[in-house]
Length: 326
Image (cartoon, rainbow, N blue to C red; front, side):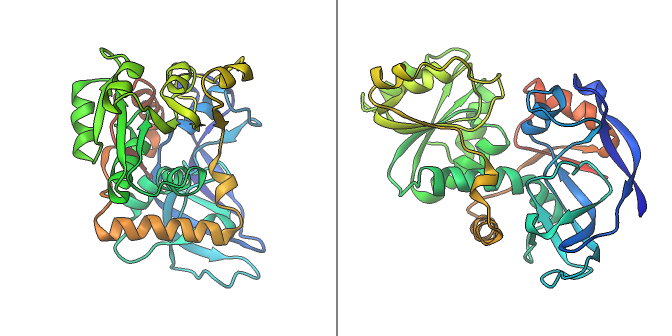
């Protein structure tokens, strides 16, 4: 057992509940490794846990995404060695830490050419885009799609990935500056929801045809508009709740709007078993190495500044990815 600094919270609430503490780091058991984080990713799902939207036992660590170097390996670990550069993008919570022990089922090796910062910026977000675009609704190219919050961390990766696939991505944004950013990253068109009607603009841009799929990480604020943008038998992919959860869904609305489909996917369902994680990460890393996806890190904070980082993210002041450094 060793010690390390980590961010924890003992009660749910605002950013102020996040505290830097000294925690125990257990020695790795069978199928586990201990690693030193070099970079940690910040994501909206972290806010969901901090506020209690996603329940967790308390006190709790926080964060799911990071990259670093293995310092110790447990029994029966054959695929990883001390000194390996690795990254992870899903549970268990506790990425906001200097060092941590993790099961190897969550880890992938970092190829040459992918930095710690880049990996921490894209593992959760990039794997999210991978399962959205390549598994939940497998885009073939030439489709026109709607993607909400196109200038955020997931959104900017989605813009680039869509362009690489030959897909026309219509991205919703909240300002002219964010519209320019999304277009610079590959969005075909943007809709500024602060001054434009989303449904009317989708109708205009598609010549009345609408879209076969909507990717929505915003939640309740965009639910109705998203359904109205779908073609008959279109798929609504509700993968996040940035504005709050969708509640009180009347399934009859899906029939009225054209026999629509709805799914509420999560990353964990698409990267299990570990072979699927490795394949998804390889596709992501290959696009980065080819230059088809450029990692955009616009904000960097020290680990001790986690509460400030949460304030910036929640207030929609951030663009691209945000990184914490231990």
